[in-house]
Image 1 (cartoon, one colour):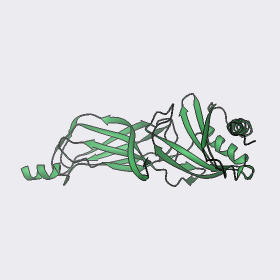
Image 2 (image 1 turned 45 degrees about the horizontal axis):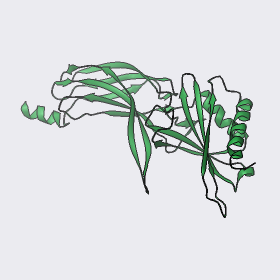
Image 3 (image 1 turned 90 degrees about the horizontal axis):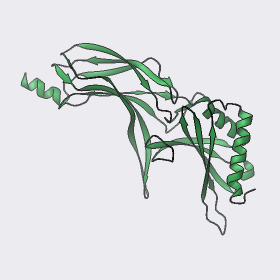
Length: 259
């Protein structure tokens, strides 16, 4: 029995967890629901806690180096201390709140390359190896976020891609933020490299962070300039939002004499 206990602690014949989601699709500020199936291993084991969290793959930059790492956020316990007997089975339902500033991974049915969110399920066994489980979660944008993207398209900006970067912006709740990148319209080509948009959502609305990457000239150096626009969750009129975005971008451009 002592040998089997040791092997269980090392992960051989350990208890296992498997989360089954009711639906793999959610939104920032929404919920993820499902059931965690816990199966006992070859020996009975004490459990400290069963918990779920979201996991994002983020880009990290340091000097000239760049790499990706997984960051967990929004952790919530779904079961406390207990004991799972050998071969026993337990089904534990859960409802998990999605942070408002969670990156979205899909846009109009298209998966965003480089943006990955998963639900991580972990069982904390004293002195043992955590078996864990990871399930992909599709996060769709909020209506106001989709409206901003559609409005920029109407202004001639072309969606280029999105990524998640480690770090914080003023007003951010998470240790990373999503940047949505757009190529400029033809009227700005030659003067603007790119427009980057970050959404800082909350129950009250969305702070739209705009950063314009200005192309350098023969005698000038390329530089970034940024600004912010606050929208409520009711701001889903594409034409009205486009007018606000156009004015905001023109104000940014006016600081540099673009228009």
